[in-house]
Image (tube, rainbow, N blue to C red; front, side, top):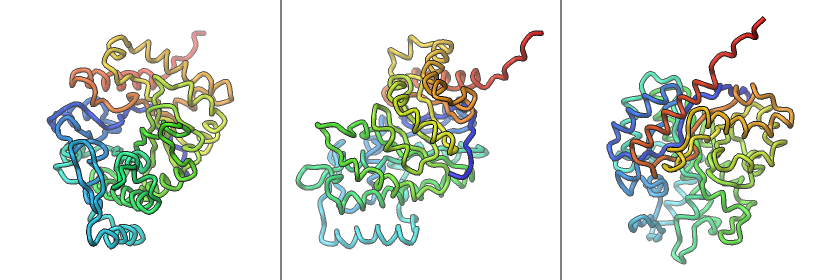
Length: 345
């Protein structure tokens, strides 16, 4: 990256909300996160807003059965796959939009977030999408080299279309590639060919001209992700802070190169959220940052090059608790950005 990103721990969010009314979800987001609002994914409104189905619209041969999705090739299947490759080469994302039916929150957001200096969106990553979408043999298409590559190009075009439409609101965009299934890196139960991951991620990232983020809400091989051309690494700092600290050398290099860390320090579980306070979360965040300061990263640099977010999406909360989580995110951000008083003489 060519420019150091200094968000100064401004607040934003991962994306999903528990609401069924898109205007209501957008209003809460704009109230709590005016600096970097995010369009809400609303899986409780419709199964079509599930993060896998939401970004499957238009992929050749897609068949949706409840919350499951698989590919049934048609007579012109190969030609349609080839068209995706051609559209990528020509940077032609016009036919890869996300409809109101699949993303009511996005289309409400376009009218409510006018005037925002920075806006955030998100796209499901190729590993997560490729594991959840299956081929005729029942295996995730991630294990089919041709389909995995085409899916990454398809998601690249989805990300590009989304970024283009968000730029109607603001020229400054952030798009996160959401990859919860990267927690399976190294797992014997869901073997992911690690050598394929960087290439698939980089294909999607090529569709994002603005700020590129990558979100994983569990433990993973962070070194693999930090070697991709991302500007922001987003992680669940509430539950997995120590997992990132074991890669502190990589994190230090990432920050020195201008990158930013999105600290997901506000819990997205109702029971944990009910027990938390502003001071408790600040203590927990500072504790999560300590290992990096021991390795030579200044605390003020972590703050300058940081964002504050919930640990992951909020769709599992009640609407009231989701509002509380966003309010706590905003309050913690303000608390961290208070000017330090001069010492008493």
